Length: 546
Figure 1 (tube, rainbow, N blue to C red):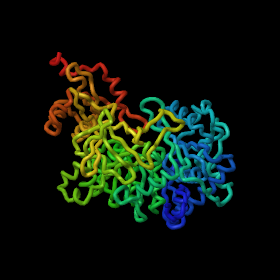
Figure 2: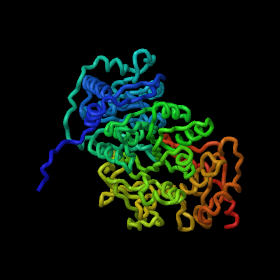
Figure 3: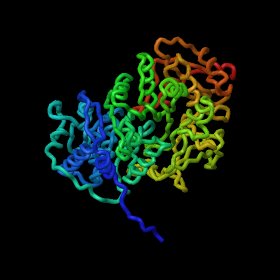
Figure 4: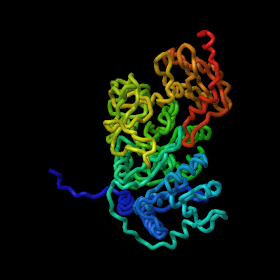
């Protein structure tokens, strides 16, 4: 027997409709590429999104067609989120920080029909335009006063198209499982792979993000996604904000500490989300200039592990609760968020930090387990670590066009590629990527734990740990360090700082100092590049073993 409830489809267009009707006067504030701060509200955003949907129809865009974007976090990009998906087409957000040949590959693989680009990326596009096989035209996201001279063919001005479009648009009704947006993985090994989200998965993910124990957005919040809108839909904030009626602040391209602080301070930002590198720059600016952020209540940190020292600084110096989070492009992306339970919140602060350092507690909608190499489930005791497996309604079941083959096991579990522990309180702790874990004498050493410990030293700006070949132990850890500005820390001092905080056999066998550690386009450390750089490095412990 089926229930007797209405069968209404979960569609992205319903989010902007709700925001306009019930929170129509709530602001959306953007720092534009042109320079000035732009302000309007949810009601105006829906009107312009509808006009843009009419533009797309006039351009011949139909259901399932892919529309690519190369754009920062701004109000025009926000309008595309709703106009494209709401009309039944697919929004393809492209990471402009990728290498040009990767951007070309992604646009061609997605078969993008049109590209919408910020002024910043016109020159980049001019360099690859001849290699874009399916692109019919380009829209520059600016007004006529700022339209650049360009050799690109079939170029249009965003504001001119909007101005000439008809008012009003009847959002079509269709199956909620229809594809809504497309985002490619960073492609650290092999070509990037496309993750194709649905309207249903996106709306369900937005519900989860708004939960009190997740990001906890409400109409009294002002949220600023520092994470780009081309990174897994700004971690879902571009959808969760209108669902909750929260004021939305979009920071554009300027991510330095001063610019981030100014926008957060001026607009009264209460919640923000981004990767550790941005928060390190903000912390440095706050400390160097004696600034504060009195409205900033919750800082969501993900993308890579947040050092304990960073968590403690935000919470004890600036009264901002840090929510350590984890997810993946394949997971829309939220999987865990580090909101403490009442019992854990009653612990002494040092013990609370032990949990806050972990990647967070599982959220409703995401099932998790860890397994050994043979697929056997391991205990949730916080000690055993194995391959992290997930499944749920907003987790990918395959990649776009079937790239990579079958990605689920027989029971529908997706292997994240991470090695992790799960504890009896529901907290998950990433110890490594499976390909980066250091295997020493048959045991695993967590490079992430070593990196976070090293970054706690005041003389360290950034740390990376890789495994180096050892004749006796197979691999041993090598610690790669970028010194903090003006610091003179040396290897023995750093190892002495780490001693006693980890097992003796986890201690790095050597420390090297570099000017810069290579990163991917999404800000993650390129361990493959580091291993290539130090493939011939001879550890000082090798002589004793031979």
